[in-house]
Length: 73
Image (cartoon, rainbow, N blue to C red):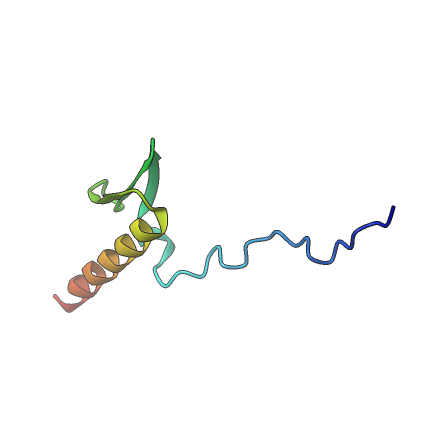
């Protein structure tokens, strides 16, 4: 029986810390049953939804807008 090649076995996540937000400003995503909730660093609910990717993108966009507003003032 031939052995399979292990060249494609790299399972490391290269995009783990490539976000455009600072680490302290990133929203926290929590799974609750089938839903995902995104909270900001103060614990305020940003969005609740069924798809993690959509929740993550919306929460990141909202956080970017808030950071822009804070820097402007």
